[in-house]
Length: 383
Image (cartoon, rainbow, N blue to C red; front, side, top):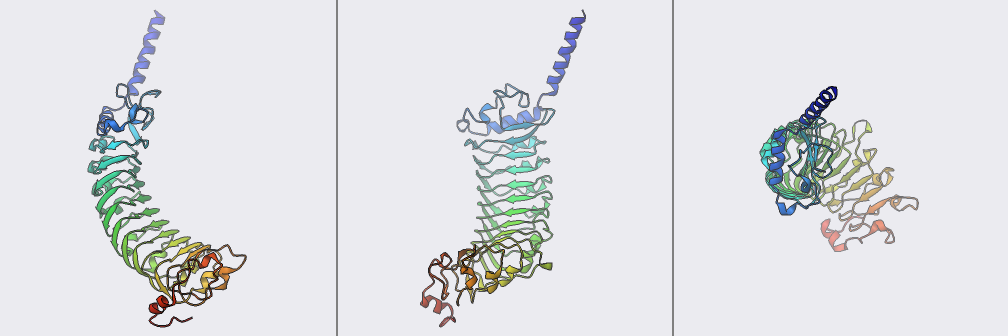
Protein backbone atom coordinates (compact mmCIF):
# COMPACT_ATOMS: atom_id res chain seq x y z
CA UNK A 1 0.00 0.00 0.00
CA UNK A 2 2.83 2.38 0.92
CA UNK A 3 4.54 1.76 -2.43
CA UNK A 4 1.33 2.60 -4.33
CA UNK A 5 0.87 5.86 -2.40
CA UNK A 6 4.52 6.74 -2.92
CA UNK A 7 4.19 6.10 -6.64
CA UNK A 8 1.06 8.26 -6.84
CA UNK A 9 2.90 11.05 -5.02
CA UNK A 10 5.82 10.83 -7.45
CA UNK A 11 3.45 10.90 -10.41
CA UNK A 12 1.79 13.99 -8.95
CA UNK A 13 5.17 15.72 -8.62
CA UNK A 14 6.06 14.84 -12.20
CA UNK A 15 2.73 16.13 -13.50
CA UNK A 16 3.17 19.36 -11.56
CA UNK A 17 6.68 19.85 -12.92
CA UNK A 18 5.44 19.23 -16.45
CA UNK A 19 2.64 21.72 -15.96
CA UNK A 20 5.15 24.29 -14.81
CA UNK A 21 7.31 23.63 -17.89
CA UNK A 22 4.53 24.45 -20.35
CA UNK A 23 5.13 27.49 -22.55
CA UNK A 24 2.51 30.21 -22.29
CA UNK A 25 -0.29 29.57 -24.86
CA UNK A 26 0.08 33.23 -25.87
CA UNK A 27 3.76 32.65 -26.73
CA UNK A 28 3.01 29.40 -28.59
CA UNK A 29 0.42 31.12 -30.79
CA UNK A 30 2.88 33.92 -31.49
CA UNK A 31 5.61 31.43 -32.49
CA UNK A 32 3.16 29.59 -34.75
CA UNK A 33 2.18 32.85 -36.46
CA UNK A 34 5.84 33.82 -36.78
CA UNK A 35 6.72 30.59 -38.58
CA UNK A 36 3.54 30.63 -40.69
CA UNK A 37 4.56 34.01 -42.15
CA UNK A 38 7.74 32.51 -43.60
CA UNK A 39 7.65 30.75 -46.95
CA UNK A 40 7.88 26.97 -46.31
CA UNK A 41 10.15 26.59 -49.36
CA UNK A 42 12.71 28.88 -47.67
CA UNK A 43 12.92 26.76 -44.49
CA UNK A 44 15.62 24.08 -44.87
CA UNK A 45 15.05 20.89 -42.89
CA UNK A 46 18.40 21.35 -41.14
CA UNK A 47 17.67 24.92 -40.03
CA UNK A 48 16.48 26.27 -36.70
CA UNK A 49 12.99 26.96 -38.03
CA UNK A 50 12.97 23.51 -39.61
CA UNK A 51 13.09 22.07 -36.09
CA UNK A 52 10.13 24.12 -34.83
CA UNK A 53 7.62 21.28 -34.48
CA UNK A 54 4.61 22.34 -32.43
CA UNK A 55 3.69 18.76 -31.50
CA UNK A 56 6.14 19.38 -28.65
CA UNK A 57 6.35 22.25 -26.20
CA UNK A 58 8.78 24.97 -27.41
CA UNK A 59 10.37 25.42 -23.98
CA UNK A 60 10.44 21.73 -22.99
CA UNK A 61 13.85 20.18 -22.43
CA UNK A 62 15.92 18.38 -23.49
CA UNK A 63 15.75 19.67 -27.08
CA UNK A 64 17.15 16.78 -29.04
CA UNK A 65 15.00 16.92 -32.19
CA UNK A 66 12.51 19.80 -31.84
CA UNK A 67 13.18 23.51 -31.23
CA UNK A 68 16.89 22.73 -31.19
CA UNK A 69 17.77 26.39 -31.84
CA UNK A 70 16.31 29.81 -32.54
CA UNK A 71 14.33 30.05 -29.29
CA UNK A 72 15.44 30.71 -25.73
CA UNK A 73 13.04 30.49 -22.79
CA UNK A 74 12.85 31.87 -19.29
CA UNK A 75 14.36 29.79 -16.43
CA UNK A 76 10.91 28.51 -15.45
CA UNK A 77 10.31 27.46 -19.10
CA UNK A 78 7.04 29.38 -19.39
CA UNK A 79 7.96 32.38 -21.57
CA UNK A 80 10.00 32.92 -24.73
CA UNK A 81 12.76 35.45 -24.05
CA UNK A 82 14.84 35.32 -27.24
CA UNK A 83 14.38 34.63 -30.94
CA UNK A 84 17.75 34.41 -32.67
CA UNK A 85 17.48 32.88 -36.11
CA UNK A 86 20.30 31.35 -38.09
CA UNK A 87 21.16 32.85 -41.52
CA UNK A 88 19.46 30.04 -43.44
CA UNK A 89 17.87 32.18 -46.17
CA UNK A 90 14.40 32.48 -44.63
CA UNK A 91 12.00 34.56 -46.74
CA UNK A 92 8.82 36.08 -45.38
CA UNK A 93 7.36 38.91 -43.35
CA UNK A 94 7.65 39.68 -39.66
CA UNK A 95 4.21 38.79 -38.31
CA UNK A 96 2.63 41.53 -36.15
CA UNK A 97 1.65 38.84 -33.62
CA UNK A 98 5.29 38.76 -32.54
CA UNK A 99 4.04 41.50 -30.20
CA UNK A 100 2.48 38.76 -28.02
CA UNK A 101 5.98 37.69 -26.92
CA UNK A 102 5.93 40.29 -24.19
CA UNK A 103 8.93 38.85 -22.32
CA UNK A 104 11.17 38.93 -25.40
CA UNK A 105 14.54 40.57 -24.71
CA UNK A 106 16.28 39.71 -28.02
CA UNK A 107 14.94 39.55 -31.57
CA UNK A 108 17.62 38.77 -34.16
CA UNK A 109 16.61 37.91 -37.74
CA UNK A 110 19.82 39.10 -39.40
CA UNK A 111 21.22 37.85 -42.72
CA UNK A 112 18.02 36.46 -44.19
CA UNK A 113 15.40 37.58 -46.74
CA UNK A 114 12.65 39.07 -44.60
CA UNK A 115 10.70 41.75 -46.47
CA UNK A 116 7.81 44.14 -46.01
CA UNK A 117 7.30 46.65 -43.19
CA UNK A 118 8.49 46.45 -39.62
CA UNK A 119 5.16 46.05 -37.76
CA UNK A 120 4.24 48.95 -35.50
CA UNK A 121 2.96 46.41 -32.96
CA UNK A 122 6.61 45.77 -32.08
CA UNK A 123 6.14 48.55 -29.53
CA UNK A 124 4.43 45.98 -27.27
CA UNK A 125 7.78 44.27 -26.67
CA UNK A 126 8.46 46.35 -23.57
CA UNK A 127 11.27 44.05 -22.36
CA UNK A 128 13.17 44.13 -25.66
CA UNK A 129 16.84 45.00 -25.20
CA UNK A 130 18.25 44.07 -28.62
CA UNK A 131 16.51 44.38 -32.01
CA UNK A 132 18.69 43.20 -34.89
CA UNK A 133 17.09 42.99 -38.33
CA UNK A 134 20.22 43.77 -40.38
CA UNK A 135 20.88 42.40 -43.87
CA UNK A 136 17.30 41.67 -44.92
CA UNK A 137 14.90 43.46 -47.29
CA UNK A 138 12.63 45.30 -44.87
CA UNK A 139 10.99 48.35 -46.49
CA UNK A 140 8.81 51.27 -45.55
CA UNK A 141 9.59 53.74 -42.81
CA UNK A 142 10.92 53.00 -39.34
CA UNK A 143 7.71 52.95 -37.25
CA UNK A 144 7.49 55.75 -34.70
CA UNK A 145 6.27 53.16 -32.20
CA UNK A 146 9.82 51.76 -32.01
CA UNK A 147 10.77 54.77 -29.92
CA UNK A 148 8.54 53.54 -27.06
CA UNK A 149 10.92 50.61 -26.40
CA UNK A 150 12.43 52.06 -23.24
CA UNK A 151 14.58 48.98 -22.49
CA UNK A 152 16.17 48.84 -25.96
CA UNK A 153 19.98 48.99 -25.83
CA UNK A 154 20.88 47.88 -29.39
CA UNK A 155 18.99 48.74 -32.58
CA UNK A 156 20.51 47.44 -35.82
CA UNK A 157 18.38 47.84 -38.96
CA UNK A 158 21.34 48.22 -41.34
CA UNK A 159 21.44 46.85 -44.89
CA UNK A 160 17.72 46.93 -45.65
CA UNK A 161 15.51 49.13 -47.87
CA UNK A 162 13.98 51.33 -45.19
CA UNK A 163 13.02 54.83 -46.34
CA UNK A 164 11.60 58.10 -45.10
CA UNK A 165 12.82 60.27 -42.22
CA UNK A 166 14.04 59.10 -38.85
CA UNK A 167 11.43 59.16 -36.05
CA UNK A 168 11.33 62.62 -34.47
CA UNK A 169 11.13 61.08 -31.00
CA UNK A 170 14.25 58.94 -31.44
CA UNK A 171 15.67 60.47 -28.25
CA UNK A 172 12.89 58.67 -26.31
CA UNK A 173 15.02 55.50 -26.54
CA UNK A 174 16.56 56.35 -23.20
CA UNK A 175 18.49 53.06 -22.80
CA UNK A 176 19.86 52.92 -26.37
CA UNK A 177 23.64 52.45 -26.60
CA UNK A 178 24.19 51.33 -30.19
CA UNK A 179 22.25 52.50 -33.24
CA UNK A 180 23.06 51.24 -36.75
CA UNK A 181 20.79 52.24 -39.63
CA UNK A 182 23.49 52.11 -42.32
CA UNK A 183 22.78 51.34 -45.96
CA UNK A 184 19.09 52.06 -46.23
CA UNK A 185 17.24 54.88 -48.02
CA UNK A 186 16.68 57.16 -45.06
CA UNK A 187 16.15 60.85 -45.84
CA UNK A 188 15.87 64.13 -43.97
CA UNK A 189 17.73 65.51 -40.98
CA UNK A 190 19.21 63.96 -37.89
CA UNK A 191 16.72 64.40 -35.03
CA UNK A 192 17.68 64.77 -31.40
CA UNK A 193 19.59 61.62 -30.46
CA UNK A 194 19.26 59.39 -27.35
CA UNK A 195 21.49 60.82 -24.63
CA UNK A 196 22.98 57.46 -23.57
CA UNK A 197 24.21 56.62 -27.07
CA UNK A 198 27.72 55.18 -27.44
CA UNK A 199 27.78 54.39 -31.17
CA UNK A 200 25.90 56.04 -34.03
CA UNK A 201 26.08 54.63 -37.57
CA UNK A 202 23.87 55.88 -40.40
CA UNK A 203 26.26 55.34 -43.31
CA UNK A 204 25.10 55.07 -46.91
CA UNK A 205 21.73 56.83 -46.73
CA UNK A 206 20.37 60.15 -48.02
CA UNK A 207 20.58 62.30 -44.90
CA UNK A 208 20.73 66.00 -45.74
CA UNK A 209 21.22 69.35 -44.07
CA UNK A 210 23.89 70.25 -41.57
CA UNK A 211 24.95 68.64 -38.31
CA UNK A 212 23.02 70.49 -35.64
CA UNK A 213 24.23 70.93 -32.09
CA UNK A 214 20.68 70.29 -30.86
CA UNK A 215 20.84 66.74 -32.29
CA UNK A 216 23.89 65.90 -30.19
CA UNK A 217 23.08 67.93 -27.11
CA UNK A 218 23.89 66.06 -23.88
CA UNK A 219 25.60 63.10 -25.60
CA UNK A 220 28.47 62.92 -23.14
CA UNK A 221 29.11 59.20 -23.73
CA UNK A 222 29.11 59.15 -27.54
CA UNK A 223 32.30 57.48 -28.82
CA UNK A 224 31.68 56.62 -32.48
CA UNK A 225 29.95 58.63 -35.23
CA UNK A 226 29.73 57.11 -38.70
CA UNK A 227 27.70 59.21 -41.14
CA UNK A 228 29.68 58.70 -44.35
CA UNK A 229 28.03 58.42 -47.77
CA UNK A 230 25.16 60.84 -47.22
CA UNK A 231 24.34 64.37 -48.45
CA UNK A 232 25.24 66.34 -45.33
CA UNK A 233 26.35 69.91 -45.93
CA UNK A 234 27.58 73.11 -44.30
CA UNK A 235 30.18 73.69 -41.63
CA UNK A 236 31.42 71.15 -39.13
CA UNK A 237 31.55 73.37 -36.07
CA UNK A 238 34.06 73.10 -33.24
CA UNK A 239 31.52 71.87 -30.67
CA UNK A 240 31.20 68.58 -32.57
CA UNK A 241 34.82 67.51 -32.07
CA UNK A 242 34.62 68.66 -28.43
CA UNK A 243 32.03 66.02 -27.52
CA UNK A 244 33.77 64.70 -24.40
CA UNK A 245 33.93 60.96 -25.23
CA UNK A 246 34.23 61.17 -29.03
CA UNK A 247 36.90 58.80 -30.38
CA UNK A 248 36.08 57.86 -33.99
CA UNK A 249 34.49 60.08 -36.65
CA UNK A 250 33.72 59.05 -40.23
CA UNK A 251 31.97 61.76 -42.25
CA UNK A 252 33.53 60.92 -45.61
CA UNK A 253 31.63 61.21 -48.90
CA UNK A 254 29.33 64.08 -47.96
CA UNK A 255 29.24 67.73 -49.04
CA UNK A 256 30.72 69.57 -46.06
CA UNK A 257 32.39 72.83 -47.05
CA UNK A 258 34.17 73.97 -43.90
CA UNK A 259 35.67 72.61 -40.67
CA UNK A 260 36.19 74.47 -37.42
CA UNK A 261 38.51 73.00 -34.80
CA UNK A 262 39.15 74.24 -31.26
CA UNK A 263 41.69 73.06 -28.74
CA UNK A 264 40.08 70.55 -26.33
CA UNK A 265 39.70 71.79 -22.74
CA UNK A 266 42.85 70.96 -20.81
CA UNK A 267 44.23 69.25 -23.91
CA UNK A 268 42.41 66.04 -22.91
CA UNK A 269 40.30 65.14 -25.96
CA UNK A 270 39.60 61.46 -26.67
CA UNK A 271 39.65 61.78 -30.48
CA UNK A 272 41.63 58.96 -32.15
CA UNK A 273 40.53 58.76 -35.80
CA UNK A 274 38.87 61.29 -38.15
CA UNK A 275 37.84 60.70 -41.76
CA UNK A 276 36.59 63.76 -43.66
CA UNK A 277 37.66 62.55 -47.09
CA UNK A 278 35.68 63.16 -50.28
CA UNK A 279 33.83 66.29 -49.20
CA UNK A 280 34.02 69.88 -50.49
CA UNK A 281 36.01 71.38 -47.64
CA UNK A 282 37.77 74.60 -48.59
CA UNK A 283 40.43 76.80 -47.02
CA UNK A 284 43.57 75.71 -45.23
CA UNK A 285 44.12 72.37 -43.50
CA UNK A 286 43.01 72.68 -39.86
CA UNK A 287 46.23 72.47 -37.84
CA UNK A 288 44.31 72.33 -34.54
CA UNK A 289 43.57 68.64 -35.05
CA UNK A 290 47.03 68.05 -33.59
CA UNK A 291 45.85 69.50 -30.26
CA UNK A 292 44.02 66.23 -29.67
CA UNK A 293 46.62 64.14 -27.79
CA UNK A 294 45.47 60.68 -28.96
CA UNK A 295 44.87 61.42 -32.65
CA UNK A 296 46.47 58.65 -34.72
CA UNK A 297 44.58 58.76 -38.03
CA UNK A 298 43.42 61.75 -40.08
CA UNK A 299 42.00 61.78 -43.60
CA UNK A 300 41.23 64.99 -45.45
CA UNK A 301 41.71 63.45 -48.88
CA UNK A 302 39.92 64.71 -51.97
CA UNK A 303 38.61 68.01 -50.72
CA UNK A 304 39.40 71.56 -51.90
CA UNK A 305 42.10 72.47 -49.39
CA UNK A 306 44.75 75.03 -50.33
CA UNK A 307 47.94 76.42 -48.82
CA UNK A 308 50.82 74.57 -47.23
CA UNK A 309 50.64 71.37 -45.20
CA UNK A 310 50.73 72.37 -41.52
CA UNK A 311 54.11 71.62 -39.96
CA UNK A 312 52.22 70.45 -36.87
CA UNK A 313 51.09 67.33 -38.74
CA UNK A 314 54.66 66.12 -39.18
CA UNK A 315 55.57 66.78 -35.55
CA UNK A 316 52.57 65.00 -34.06
CA UNK A 317 54.06 61.83 -32.54
CA UNK A 318 50.76 59.98 -32.15
CA UNK A 319 49.72 60.60 -35.78
CA UNK A 320 50.52 57.47 -37.77
CA UNK A 321 48.12 57.68 -40.74
CA UNK A 322 47.63 60.90 -42.72
CA UNK A 323 45.78 61.14 -46.03
CA UNK A 324 45.94 64.57 -47.69
CA UNK A 325 45.88 63.41 -51.33
CA UNK A 326 43.54 64.96 -53.88
CA UNK A 327 43.72 68.56 -52.65
CA UNK A 328 45.64 71.66 -53.81
CA UNK A 329 48.45 71.89 -51.25
CA UNK A 330 51.51 73.84 -52.37
CA UNK A 331 55.09 74.27 -51.21
CA UNK A 332 57.44 71.62 -49.97
CA UNK A 333 56.06 68.94 -47.62
CA UNK A 334 57.67 68.78 -44.15
CA UNK A 335 60.86 66.71 -44.24
CA UNK A 336 59.85 64.79 -41.09
CA UNK A 337 57.40 62.81 -43.22
CA UNK A 338 60.32 61.19 -45.03
CA UNK A 339 62.70 60.50 -42.14
CA UNK A 340 64.23 57.01 -42.23
CA UNK A 341 62.94 56.14 -38.77
CA UNK A 342 59.36 57.23 -39.41
CA UNK A 343 56.45 54.78 -39.26
CA UNK A 344 54.19 57.19 -41.08
CA UNK A 345 51.71 55.98 -43.71
CA UNK A 346 49.18 57.68 -45.95
CA UNK A 347 49.35 59.87 -49.05
CA UNK A 348 50.32 63.39 -50.08
CA UNK A 349 49.79 62.65 -53.77
CA UNK A 350 47.61 64.45 -56.33
CA UNK A 351 48.34 67.91 -54.92
CA UNK A 352 50.41 70.87 -56.12
CA UNK A 353 53.44 70.12 -53.96
CA UNK A 354 57.04 70.75 -54.96
CA UNK A 355 59.90 68.53 -53.91
CA UNK A 356 57.79 65.56 -52.86
CA UNK A 357 60.23 62.65 -53.35
CA UNK A 358 59.01 60.43 -56.16
CA UNK A 359 60.63 57.45 -54.45
CA UNK A 360 58.39 57.83 -51.40
CA UNK A 361 55.08 55.97 -51.24
CA UNK A 362 53.68 59.06 -49.51
CA UNK A 363 54.03 61.03 -52.74
CA UNK A 364 51.96 58.67 -54.83
CA UNK A 365 49.97 59.26 -56.94
CA UNK A 366 51.92 61.97 -58.76
CA UNK A 367 51.19 65.66 -58.28
CA UNK A 368 48.65 67.62 -60.35
CA UNK A 369 49.75 69.32 -63.53
CA UNK A 370 51.01 72.89 -63.41
CA UNK A 371 47.99 74.05 -65.46
CA UNK A 372 45.50 72.57 -62.98
CA UNK A 373 47.32 74.11 -60.02
CA UNK A 374 47.57 77.48 -61.75
CA UNK A 375 43.83 77.50 -62.39
CA UNK A 376 43.10 76.53 -58.77
CA UNK A 377 45.06 79.55 -57.51
CA UNK A 378 43.84 81.95 -60.17
CA UNK A 379 47.35 82.34 -61.49
CA UNK A 380 50.77 80.97 -60.65
CA UNK A 381 50.61 78.95 -57.39
CA UNK A 382 52.98 80.15 -54.70
CA UNK A 383 55.82 77.81 -53.81
